[in-house]
Image: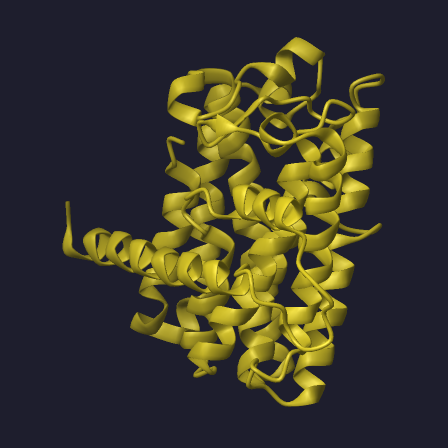
Length: 304
């Protein structure tokens, strides 16, 4: 293992630990100002859906893009935690029988299995809402205009024109397989939108120029596509024990994917191209962008 890869893996683990710690703090029993009470069962379900390990890739991207441009580290950690709440809410809801119908997530029972359907829905609702609470809270040390930009960008990434819309298209794809353009749009919304936001958020936190913001947004789009391609490859080739969830479900449901359309060799070639393009986007930042380039490689070559 070379030193660059070792440094990346150490940073990824270190940041994941920080994210886990702040999420645990945010999901503590004590009420915040303005809250009346935190129902125990609901809070436990939220914690079950969030505090279950994972690489915390999306918060990592927020923190590293902010650091690249000199943003506030503590604020970036909180924005990363807010984004992870949105991501985890989507997983809680995606696992429901009406959606992807999964019993396992990261090797553990999904929230609706560990609790019940209604509690899982409410846990997801609460996590989504809490994300914007975290951004707006006075503890997030950012100027108000940057908080507004973050709320707007995350709303667009998570909502009808982003992740939720993409999930709708994904459900429709089970009945009528989309063409290549439709698959690309679906994946850019369902998976790519939050990853794109994660990279753009770092620029917003740092108060960066429009050029820097667009550059990091495009970088996020590249690795978002790479993430989904790698995910589709894993669904095709990995086993459930490695993934911590069921695999082979896309083929079983007849869902169209770019991997199914073009084959494994094409997907691997495309992943290599996306990593190259992502690295080229960050070339103006020199060695400061090394860890983010390693992140792109990690996303494209991940095994779980």
